[in-house]
Image (cartoon, rainbow, N blue to C red):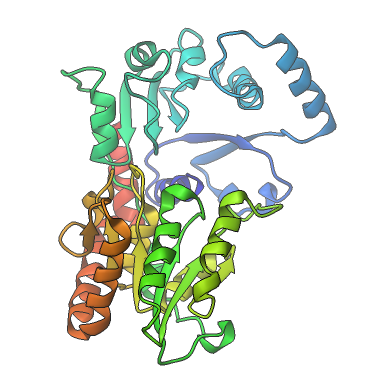
Amino acid sequence: MENLLDFCLEYNDHHTLHDITVYSIWHPDVEKHPAQKSKVNHYRYINMNSYVAKVMKRLFKRLRKSDDYYHYSVEYFLQQSMRHACRQPYDVIIVENRPGFVLKLTGNTSARLVIHQENDYLNPQVRQYQQIYDATSRIINTSAYITRCVQAIAADDTKCRTVLNGIDTQRFYNAKPQSREQIGLKDDDFVLVFNGRLTPEKGVLELIQAIRLLSTIPNLKLLIIGASFYGHDKTPSPFIKSLEEETRAVRNKVLFTGYIDYTDIPSYLKMADISVLPSMWEEPFGLTIAEAMAAGLPLITTRCGGIPEICEGVATILERDHIVEHLATSILDLYHHPEKRERMSQASLERSKLFDKEIYAKNYFAAIE
């Protein structure tokens, strides 16, 4: 969310389209950020970690209303933001990925309310979905899949717009490959890369199981980039332990990097031969899919959620039934056909142009206008 918002703010600063105020959590480094120099983007920060804030959050927890939508800390952030926001003459208030915020904003501001959501958070199964839907002027969704989820609320929907996510494509186009030798790989290794959170829905367990089926291929290696919770792991989760157990039989073929800073991800991707991202849930969009394409990688993924909208026609897209066997077969196919890998690589690069951050920001503002 932060990256996507930064793209929009950068675009707005360059084109001076709108006067924007961002309400966000305070951090000690905020005053040093170059974004502070903008004349059209402004920032108000809520300190959530000071001693006073911690006391106030506890008090807020005791006094909170029974109909609060989110965790009390999230609701406290909303309350503190509203103290200022609802007194301003804003034309539009955009709620990022928290549709429930609309419930308290309604009646407290004359601004039109817009929801921008990255996840399936507004559909007929969520609490107070009709009130949230009725209170909004526009609902911007990260994929047509998420738009369809919202439109289940109203068959005659006119509020939804789909704006596919964007990435900084130049960062991936221009990255230099990470040295294989530095991380224990050889030049003649055939390297598969998985990049993402190490959670069950991302399909990393099934990918390791596929590698076990291919254990006789001598130079096949799997590079797993990621951690279980955005680099904030304190102790290994039960799922991480199950991954470690699964790799015992193919320990010489699987390399875990742990958390890698996002600025270094392009270099790690450019080092690989193919990307394998077998998502096992209804992925709303899948930024790692677009990133793999921008790195020029042949791609193997799954048909779920919004993923086909990103890579249909340029990637190997598998059904999730019998996924382990299908992964092994698809990996083997690309392993034996370098000319196919080259065609897919070029197709990935061409397709990735659709997800450039400039296009994303332009479409985002167009949906609001």
